[in-house]
Amino acid sequence: MSLSVVHHVHPLQLSAAQLTLRGLLRPLRPGPGRLVASREPAGPAAAGPDQDPQQQVRLLHRQGARFLEQQNKLLETKWALLQEQKSAKSSRLPDIFEAQIASLRGQLEELQVDGGRLEAELRSMQDVVEDFKNKYEDEINRRTAAENEFVVPKKDVDAAYVSKVELEAKVVALMTELQSQIADTSVVLSMDNSRSLDLDGVIAEVKAQYEEMVKCSRAEAETKFEILQVQTGKHGDDLRNTRNEIAEMNRAIQRLQAEIDAIKNQRTKLEAAIAEAEERGELALKDARAKQEELEAALQRTKQDMAWQLREYQELMSVKLALDLEIATYHKLLEGEESRLAGDGVGAVNISVVNSTGGSGNGSGGAIGLSFGGTMGSNALSFSSSVGPGPLKAYSIWTTSTSRKSARS
Image 1 (tube, rainbow, N blue to C red):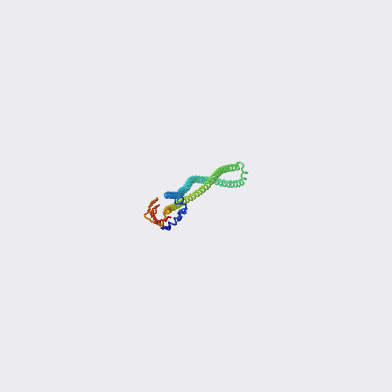
Image 2 (image 1 turned 90 degrees about the vertical axis):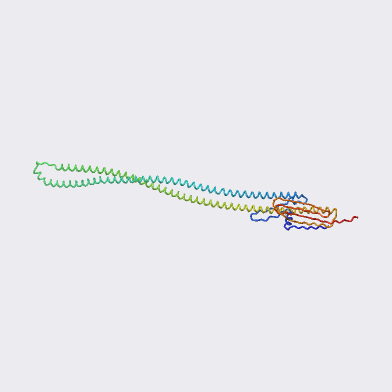
């Protein structure tokens, strides 16, 4: 008995069949951002050719469904993580910058309120200083008036003193003249005792009158002078107090002006900080949007890679299913031929396999058709398979045999 098998299969299908028989899947081509398919055991589908082809197809479909569910869960997890990162970044950044800007604006409003209060205090202090200036000018005017009033009594005192000096000089001159006259008339008196003239009493009386007048004028002038000195001292004390108060007000004005300048500088710094924070917030938002676009592009690439891997996986599953069916068919044919040969004896058996491809399937499901036919000296088997979006494949097998009768003794 001779057995010859003619098998026309593409080399890629042969390598995939070898990997399928070993229970492994061919690893997918890795690319940028693509997922790499892990090796999975063929499971019960490659246990042996004794199982039902429909059972094998169901097992293969289950494996494919599990793989797709795993990939779908993985992509959903990645998508959820990307969405969380995107939403967390895009939601946190505006809140942070808005809180910082609100805080800076609150500080700016407080500084504006403090500045208004200090400006009001400055205006009130300026009013007080103006009032004290007016009081100071009034005191200066009163002092000038008092000094002018003091000049008049002083002139009177000076005139009285001059008149006193003149009167004293006149008295001295009169005394001298009287003494000379007395000296000249002493002889006459001695000669004429009938005349009685008391010149000493007259002179003493006149002198007493003039001294009394001088004393009164001096006392009056000294009294006025003391009054003016008291008033001058009082006005001087008031003037010194006013000057001290004006100096204190000037110092307070300078201190308030320094505080206002510091607050204005702080306000300028806060406005610059607010502008800088707004600029940083805009830049951060632009960066976040750019990262979001990059993540969306990466997600789109991942979806495309997943679709490509799913398509490649379906093609591989189609090849595997076709090869498994082909092996099972060979096994059944061989068993049938062996059983038939064991009963009838045959000469030569020729088995030919024709692989034809036609049409294309666009669905994600699969269909398998088998048909057996045989005559006395020949058998024929044909089947077709279509799994996934791959092409529809049809297989036909013919076996011929020549019977020889054996001699019986």
